[in-house]
Length: 201
Image (cartoon, helix red, strand yellow):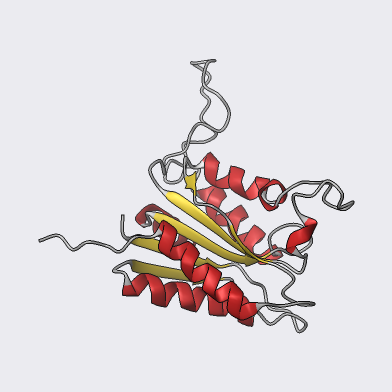
């Protein structure tokens, strides 16, 4: 269980060049490599080779998606990535269609995943403050949490049969950043969910 695929889903904008997300990817890479994990990477600036990206998902024991939350969802370039890569992977490499068959009416939608036993982690950066979530007195999110907002992303990986690792989030990164504390929390989060790899002797 020592293969980790890191996706930097950030899309470059002049007002948001992506330094924080890139640094979180670098820190995750350094920390996990130091604990014995093998890594593969993809960024949204890479040329898109659909079969190679599907193979990375199949190779990985854990997929980490490092992304800003733009307009309550994923950057457009990562949505494009999913449209091409994940749709192509419905041929049985990521999932066997949606899981249903015409021969068996008991098969439910979303049960065709072929990446069972694998995990995923959403690591998010927000302009929204932490206090905006999980508090019914906050009028915008109305008490809903980060995972409620990102539920479609969770469903995408659930469609493949994968299991979630607790979501990580950096909040208020533009108006009230606390970056060094975010880095410390991220390191602790990775330590909690990625034990050191024990060499086979």
